[in-house]
Image (cartoon, rainbow, N blue to C red; front, side, top):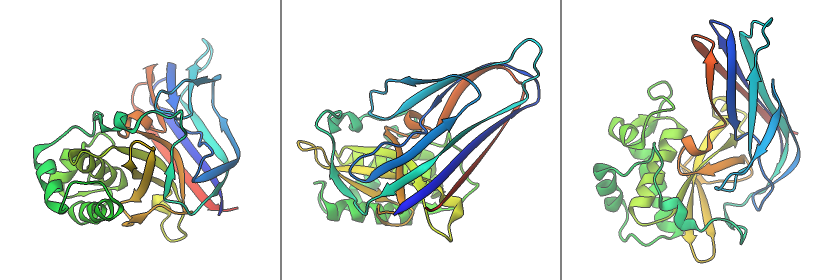
Length: 269
């Protein structure tokens, strides 16, 4: 399926912005699950490519206001076309990081005793398999019901698990921690999802579970939709949690209060 995507992030400030440095995970890569046909980034400053040890495509942009400017807003736009493949299992490139790296926790996916005990109760044996991974996926979807507006981007997996509510980011974080607690390598994936009746899920998150670490064999699972990923999904980046592969992160001087808005449109090309 060919999908046309436009992802616009707008920053507005109550006072003039003096300087900002932002890192961007906004450029998908071609691989087993997708082929990037066309892609580009529009930014308010010079765009530089950066190395990313996790294997993602990473850029930085510096925004500087001239002395005679009142920089009160700027936007970053990613746009392109991706041909997706109906494939939920694949092998990493031989040069990719060993899957054991993704047993490491990130700031939002720290181990939690209650979540760990719960995860072990969801599967008959802790061995990684397609059946066990799917069973855990369904269990997380039941335990953390999808509801917008009850969590924030800083909400941890433990907090979402305790609340029993959250969005796709929270469900993916809980699934990631649960899988790692069973000894599986798991990584958080940020990306896009197309469905004509679900525009709010255009910006989406899911989880990769490693089925065979010695071969870099992975299975992608969408907890929100209780299924393996398919041609509706476009991968942007993967990491230990949202923090490690957020679409846009940065630091700034000036600007006062910041207002952030994100708009993602995705449709068949």
